Length: 279
Image 1 (cartoon, rainbow, N blue to C red):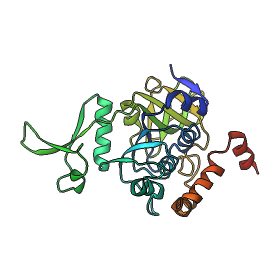
Image 2: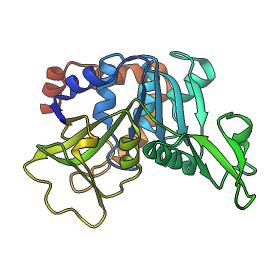
Image 3: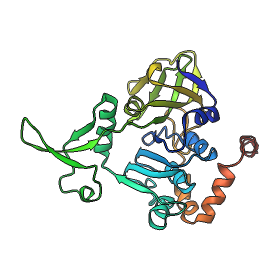
Image 4: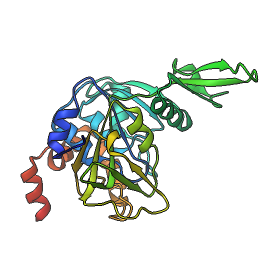
């Protein structure tokens, strides 16, 4: 039975120190609200998994939540580096972080393998790539039928998947519209899945041609989080805050400005944030 919880309850119940957690969403529907609640609840030693980690992972890493990052390409899209990630790698601040870098194709295939219950993903790729020399989890096998050399990577099976979506019904079925990314695969691959949504409705309404429905039996809990993808966007609800992505470069570049922004915009108590946003 899918639980319907508040976001603080959901994070408190499903996110624990030392877990592997994948917060997925490609370009839009990035679960920022869930990431912020993880930071507020001071979870530690997490293995964070994500294709294209961007600002929310910069924030999680900068606040000391992460022990390891499994990823494919990390940066501030269209702007530049993730400065908190760089500080952790180069200067071990606020703590050292272990990196396991893959290509996008390998990450997507690894989620597929995890969803299918397979031990590894097999794909064409990585021939000539420098990643092979720094990632021991990239290996090569010979196809027993064709003799072709193929790449193999371990399946991704996070302890917990967190995704954001437009709507859920009261039974726990979830509708994702727009760019669907790997949300379906990560939910099916994970041990448990938490979905934050813009609204909970009596029914999901007619889906658009480019949509995906996650069935209630694949979803452990639903949490209402209106605006939960900002500053990314939620197709059909609000647009991407491009100015914030640009501003983040200066905010995150120095530790002091980063910590001050996090204190003012994330670490405040809910009632203080609500009062500030109402002004």
